[in-house]
Length: 448
Image (cartoon, rainbow, N blue to C red; front, side, top):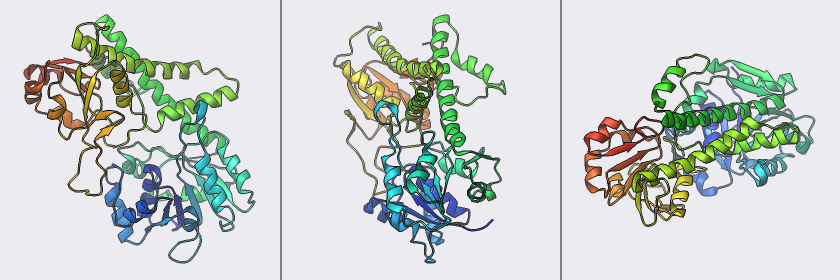
């Protein structure tokens, strides 16, 4: 495998993971960000985001001299320590959901404009961010450089296991009409030995949306099945165990919950709807997936109402609720489109008094640079789950942090006003709650 000079523009969880992991594969990598203070922290090995193994990998690769950080994309494409320009430039930039669900590509387009004249002849520009179908063609148009190739190389990284996913991929997808450029990008990953899909750029771009939207459909389906289980007296845990052994279905993404969220699934489902609408295709299945997810959040609120008041239409005015978990999933500190926060907003609108605890949002003695917040979107934060339970008429488990399984639930029960736990992740063993004198209410369980 040839060592390449690589520039990575953007140091979010995709960009930083991409840069650190490519460096670990032997490439010379320069990562760029516009935030000067963040770049300085990264040079010191301080990683702001919660991502297992990433901080250690960054420190290791910086020490090895294979990874460095600069301010600005312009510096990244021409700042390698050997004085040579980058051969491959990865664009790992935010593409948030814009008006009407369309991906906002302003950050991508700004970097293209900034670096267009600086790219060496023969450079390959790689769209790593999740972007709409046609973005590679649009990138080539904006570059207006016949001597620069554009490749689509979508990421398939799960927050909370991004380093593992990068180094142990199910597949590498590379989309480009120029075979030589596609093969150069694919060769960056050669040491991983993963199956490689070489295709056109449009197919590669659509592949990422297709994968994420399928997962969203699977999650909405299992939440709908959980509701049906409650109505007919079945248990969703038994149902999903049974169907999960079918190799055509698999065990993954069969856990019911408060709905899906995060930085990818919400924007990708809406973006694919935009693609379908532009193609004059009514994607009813995907619309139903989104609608089911929205409904799931209200269903959780109804469960809390019933648990506290004895009826689904009861008042939550001035009812104190302790919320366990606010990040969109365990293993990350990412709050973007968190279903926990969406449910918190609905509970607050209903008049409830909320207090929240999340292990990713409290002070970390090992990371003095970590920013600790007093509240998140109107939810006051406390440093201990027992404090969240103090005087609560119900504790609501919203994020599947493993530590919640082993809390001292007897102590929790001792400080609560009512002994009720609404477990939207079916995380805590019902027997554990019963032994602590608590009534546990799950999703799709017989006791729901």
